[in-house]
Image 1: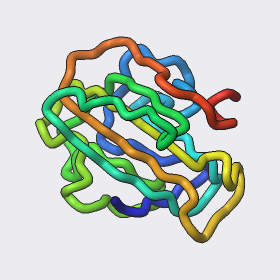
Image 2: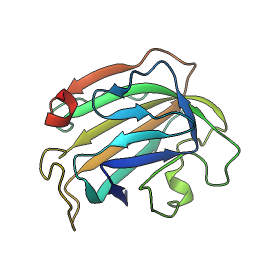
Image 3: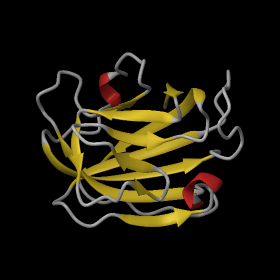
Image 4: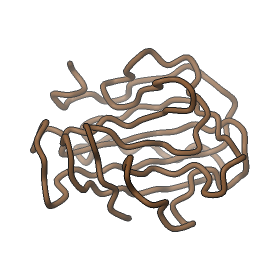
Length: 158
């Protein structure tokens, strides 16, 4: 787990070339702004959020109990030309530790499951302490249509 710093309501998925077949905003949680700009939408406008990364060789069990408010899955193509790999960072953050890489199996297509909680606590505010937590899971998989698994936060319904 590490801290990333949201800015303008965004975290970046650096090293992601593109999402497969994603509408403008998937479940109010993930978006593809084009030209390698894959983002996670945060509830806070600016401030630290907790990020946990988990990589596996196949789809992990889905835990959508009361722990997570919003959960989406999308296929993302990892751009293996970068030195830092595919990582979740704030727009002004330095790359996190090597252990935070999502593309541990090299370049190509991955399934990305993004789970979030706490996005309503300080919606559109600036915070000094983390109130949101994101779990980002990735595993190699051929592209498939995106899905919204859970959507209970205010942001996911807008």
